[in-house]
Image 1 (cartoon, rainbow, N blue to C red):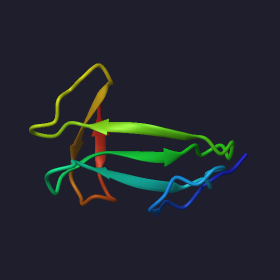
Image 2 (image 1 turned 180 degrees about the vertical axis):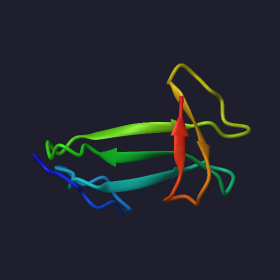
Image 3 (image 1 turned 135 degrees about the horizontal axis):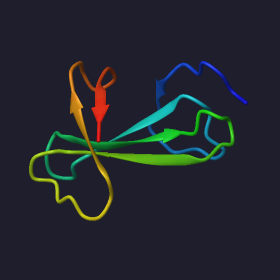
Length: 79
């Protein structure tokens, strides 16, 4: 099990994923981050997706997190 993984940005979702890998997902038509894929911190190599609330982004059925503070890499999330 990985512990204290350092976060780092990636451009592709490699398999297996390295703990700490983060890939930002941008709105297709606007310069707006609508979520991010992140590698499981346990080291299993799987990816998960966190959807962020964003103006103009349809909520769908996926849980959405509100983002406050910081920049694209330093934020606080709340359900």
